[in-house]
Length: 222
Image (cartoon, rainbow, N blue to C red; front, side, top):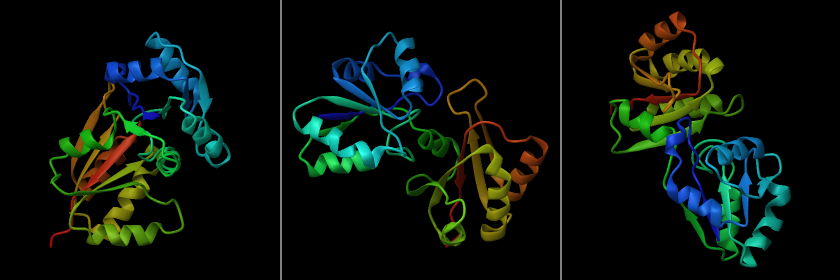
């Protein structure tokens, strides 16, 4: 069986007892970065056999991992922060396990976009999760589609790209489109800023962006 285990996005208190139980019962833990996961487990008093599983090796090691799991081995999958497969490695493994008849369970737990969406004040009964936009090829196509999207859209972005993204949102969605940007969720300097695209452009010109960002974009008016 494969157990997908969310890990804290900042606050170690978000590591759940079920996550600890799953890791203790696993014969090995697949980690996006064995150093990061190893540090977390040590802080929680846990020991585990760690194996690297990330975007640069997942195609290479996939078949071997699935073979082990199909033979009856129990394993966990962790990413550096949040729920694996949500803008992190994991989808390919989950799909391959299902195809091979391996049981897959995912524990509920930390992920960045849900709290950012909830505190945005924007409609969240229906929404679109886009993750990271392409850096180059296909970026304008996605932005054009976003501009017409009637539902709230959730994006991830790195701090050094926030000014560029805001400029693009102003161009494609208009400077008056409602927006909410959260950073450092669950951490000491957690912050959410709400307003129009133009207002948030002015805010981040005065306050250079730092941390990890979730951008929530209001939908187009029908």
